[in-house]
Amino acid sequence: MNSKLSYTAALTTLCLAGFGGAYAAGSDQNDALGIKDAGISLTQAISAAEQHVGGKAASAEYEHEDGRWIFEVEVVKGTEVMDVEVDPASGQVLRAVSDKADEADREAGEKADD
Image 1 (spheres, rainbow, N blue to C red):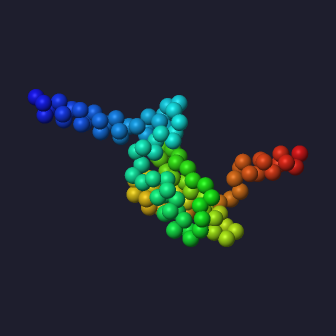
Image 2 (image 1 turned 120 degrees about the vertical axis):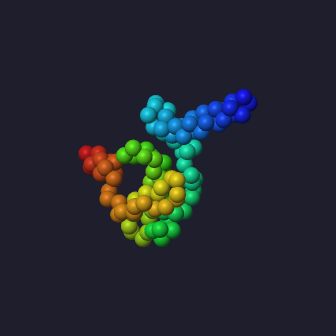
């Protein structure tokens, strides 16, 4: 009887832990709470992105994008800015593309010209 109760408690704990990030993404809570389910830290994601590009990170965040969690790191190398996506489970770089001017940057420039 005691082992059955322990098994049920363990299963419940695993289910709650697994759905923690999904709950944060689908609720009014801060999406940063989803990071508790990541296999690597933000610092490790930044390091992977910097090594991949050979530059220095300028910004990084943990986002829920296209139905999945992802680390997104902006890395600067020389005069080029790269958007690097890092898998939060494995730490592998999934994608690195040249960053075009952000929409917010363009809007800020237009407002300054007014």
